[in-house]
Length: 281
Length: 252
View 1 (cartoon, rainbow over the protein chains, first blue to last red):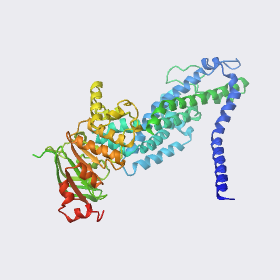
View 2 (view 1 turned 135 degrees about the horizontal axis):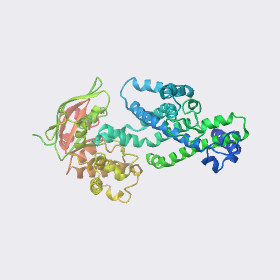
View 3 (view 1 turned 135 degrees about the vertical axis):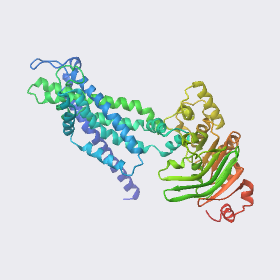
View 4 (view 1 turned 180 degrees about the vertical axis):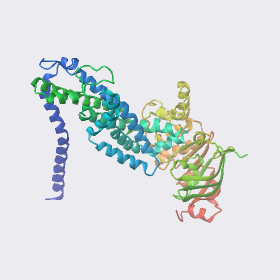
């Protein structure tokens, strides 16, 4: 075989292998989404998005309260997770200390590895016990704590990627360090940080275990953040283990809505930061 | 009281390594002073000591006195941020802010210092871009990202950004080393233009460049200022043997 033919063959084989690997990455997502669409698509109707669950035995009803509940829980979690995660990541990336960054990084990775149900117990002890009731707040705290290490680590990595020459340019212009950090470093890193936040939101949107004994779930509209609140993940879980076919179908539909919310949030964030990323290149 | 920069017994360290030894130097105002010398001789550190950027590096410190028009830049209670407003800097590699447009890049210094007046900002940006000889090339695309310009244009954008805040001194740390000869020539013309309003200190590896743009040239070697003099004299009749060896290419 001549060297040209060999190169041609190797090139082709490697090309096909890489393509197959890339396809394999997105295949599970397509399968999951397709299966959810097949199983739950028929139960999706206007009622699903506008009504609360019907009592056992009555057909129909929806998960409107759970959809709203999930969005509220995500909002609460962001309220805790984003400031702590982003500011913490910024501090660690900027720190001149010899040990602090590696210690924080290690602890964040450990926290990231803690099973989410343990974090649920943590929020239970921290919020539910003193308040003496399950609440949206407790669920938000549990999810927020799960977000912190993810957001902190991505923020730190992205901030480190901002070239030192940009900081120097800002300082040399006579800007105080905090202004350089906020207006130049953070702005430059915005697109990357957004991606990290999206990953964190996608992760917490589907969390069920830490919500079981914090947000608790609710078959009705909630009345305040200090009350138990419904969440899609809990609702799907409850319906999936129930003995009713109708509830099973609604569980599929709930899962489909949940994955769609994550998809939409990621898409919006992508579009919002697309221009910035293009500029940053 | 001296006009321009007066540097007295300046020493600088990175950790325990001393990189500047007892440098004494006067930089006259409204003139171009070039600093030459082999890599690692301390000329970049020297200019970074003038605008107090040296101390930004972890472990770096310095001692000595730097006077700008009589004001002690290292005096007690002097804010390095205020020093850097009076002394602008242009770096080796063009470093426009990537998320900002051409306009925003030039306006950055004033805007981030709190100036909101749109008309004023527009006037300042136009004047700075004209000073940097970039206005005609970018006036129709002021809102394009600064990073979309060519390398030479980006460097002039950085010069515009630095002069927009009307500093008294402009430090240029090898401003042309990443540019082609045509872009280099434009920057050199620009330097000759700018010295009407500014005191310029330029670090360069290119001795022809030093000869072309500067009135004064200083030669650094191993952290010491070996010799400083009128540019033509330094290149034709160096007083020191080390200077002669360097400019005739016998080492470095």
